[in-house]
Every structure is written in structure tokens, then in C-alpha cells.
Length: 317
Image 1 (tube, rainbow, N blue to C red):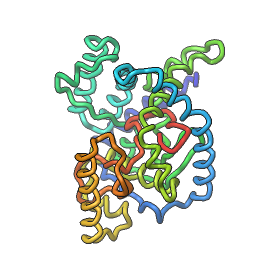
Image 2: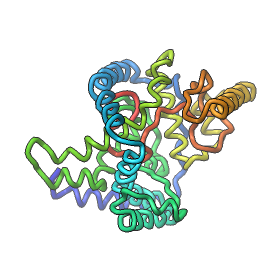
Image 3: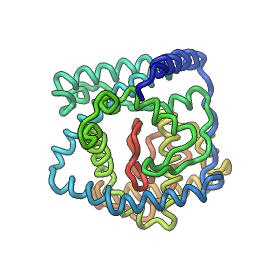
Image 4: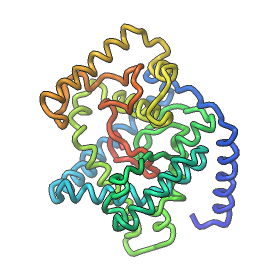
């Protein structure tokens, strides 16, 4: 990690990124989910490996973390990590040619780092300063880089050939990874903040374990949920109908779309009756509706929107 060429390389990426962002490259269309998985043999083996690691390591640790902490404490800790990783968002918003959101994120970082006591509190949200995390994978999409095949990597989790580049690039601007680069402690203790962050991410996904465990094909569920989730992030929560239809196979008929809308409406009614924290029935496995303009529904196993580090060792993030 300590190399003279690294700063020059990153400066080159920034200059190239700003140039490409200013030229407003068109976003490449997504690949069709399900039918376009050329590395499926490898991916399924890595998924099985990750699920085993998750079962015996990450999930028990995450459950223990939830047991020994209150909801309020976990919220403060998550706010701290969200704030700590805000520089990743700011850099990528600049690279995407979005000065307004970059200023919002900078304001959030300054407010929460000071009045919010290093980010453990979130006064910026109470002041209505919007939050819109992003990452280098989204930046590449806005530069016109194609998505590429889906990949399931050991310990990393779901990604694509395009998204995998966010790991080295975003980590360069991540304060936690900077701390690792600048320190060499006994027992590799410099990695402790990263490990703790991953535990908080995995803990946030625990409520979705039952949905994943009940899936007919958990691998396909995670793959499609990840790609739908990323599509919504690439388009900042408002993907065009054409992109959704392409992702779903280019032939999303009006009848199928109406069926999906009915399933989602049933899910909303279920949550209204049983409480929003209740696990919905079968509608939860429906894909994102072609006409939806909001964020991805409960089909997606939660993944940190701007994570540059590995996801949980299991299915998602």
C-alpha cells in the first residue's frame, strides 16, 4: 500500500473522473438479471463458502452485538461510522459532477463531526441536510462503464466487474483504511475499526435472515436483490422504466408489472396491519416494480450504499 505511484495514480483517477463527469457520459444499460450470469458456477461456490463463514462467524457475532447493546446505542454507533465514511461520498459526488450533493455531504460531515460529537449524533438530519451516500461503482456507471458480469467474491460478497473497483478506490479515501495503512499494531489491531464496522453492518441485516432462509434459491435471490439495489443507487432512487425492463429481461409486460404492484400493495397492507417491523409474507420476494420511482423495496437484503469494504461474509453485505 505504501508506494510512490499511488498518490499519482489517485490524482490521475480524480482528473480523469472530473473530465468524464463534465462530459456527462450516458449510463450503460444493465445486464438482464437471472439469464446473464456467466460466472454462476464459480459464484455459487463462493456463495456457499460465504454462507458457511457467515453461519459460524459473522451471524453469531452480530447476534451477540445486538444482545449486549440497546437500539439507541447501535444507532449512535452506526451514525458514527456513517459520518466517518462521508469523505468517500464527497469524493464520488465530485467525480460524478454533482456539486450540490457534494456540498450537502460536506455540510453533514462538518456538522456531525462537531455538533454531533464525532458523528455519534446526527444533528444534520434534524437540520434537514440531506444524506445521499454513493461510491465509486456508481461513479463508474455515470462515466458510462458497463456493469459487467455479476460476481460473488469470498468474504466480500456480491458485486459486479464494475462495482469491484470501488474496493481499492473508495478505500483510499476511507479514514478507517487510512488508519490501517498508517499503523502497524500488535495482533493487527489496526483492523479493529473495520471489523467492528462489518459487525454493525451484519447486525443491521439480521431482520432479513428469515426472508433469505425461506427463499427457494437463496443465491439467485441475493444476486437479483443486489442488482436491483444497485440499479436504484446508480439512478439515485429513480431508475427509468427502460433500465428496469432491461434488468428484468427486456420483456416486462404490463400484466406482470400490475401483478408486482398488487403484491407490493399486499405487502404494504400487511405491514400496516401487523406493524412495519413484521416479516411480510410472499410479496416480500417480488422483484422491484417496473413503475416504481422510489428506493428498492424489501426484496433487497440490506447493503451499505457506499460501502467500500467487504460486505458480511454471508449473503449481503
